[in-house]
Amino acid sequence: MSSPKKKRKKKRYSSNLSEGAWRYLKPLLPASIVGRPRTLSLRHIINAILYVLKTGCQWRQLPREFPCWTAVYYYFRKWTLNGTWKRIHDALRSRLREKNGRHPHPTAACLDSQSVKCTAVPGERGYDAGKKINGRKCHILVDTMGLLLTVVVTVASVQDRDGARQLLNQLPECCQCLRLIWVDGGYAGQLVQWVAEQFKFCLKVVLRPRESRKFVLLPRRWVVERTFGWLNHSRRLSKSYERLTRTDEAWVYVRMTHIMLNRLA
Image (cartoon, rainbow, N blue to C red; front, side, top):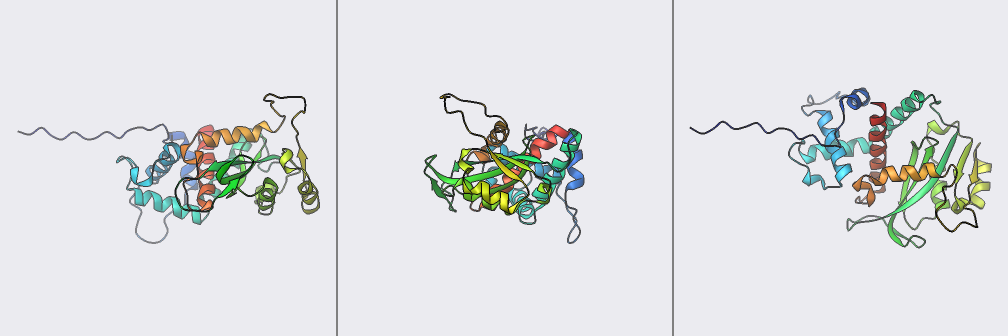
């Protein structure tokens, strides 16, 4: 007689949501209102998306423990287009700030950019002559805790000052209380005057000491650099694998959402 087949145990990946993180995330996920009842577990869908983010694998290379890659990609793409990722991210950021005794809307922030290379996937790209990188540039605005406020991804050939204008022109509602933004020397010049005329806050340039030749930890500026470090821990964000810059922005929100869920849990 043939031996009975053993049930395959589901693997536990380090990128999976914990029980505490899932309790925070579940109420924020959109409910299925029209159409057929949902048969897939949204928790398994989220875990599959986090696996792609962590490992940088292709959608088609998802392990069998997860739902079919087409279903996973469907939810990721749908929530990217309708703004679900950003809405969940903003709600968790406000909750985490309140947990740490902060006001939901910050009054100070840090602004910076980082250029990353593009892969062979077709899409917009440019050459950053300063960093000698052919790819895209990620402009982020973070609060004093290093939590993301907003992100804009452009081609790498866009100057920091021009990218900052795009980002500041579409600030979300959570930035209505901003009064001060720290930046590096690349944002000095006409941008400082333009911000003073257009907005209620000001840019404060933090310069590197002229006499120092080694690495110097600049006050306030290290916060945004640490956030870039958090993003680079995910292979999907180490390079740009996407055709559209909007998708790159969505991955940044997913990564920061995962970080905040782990802190809340």
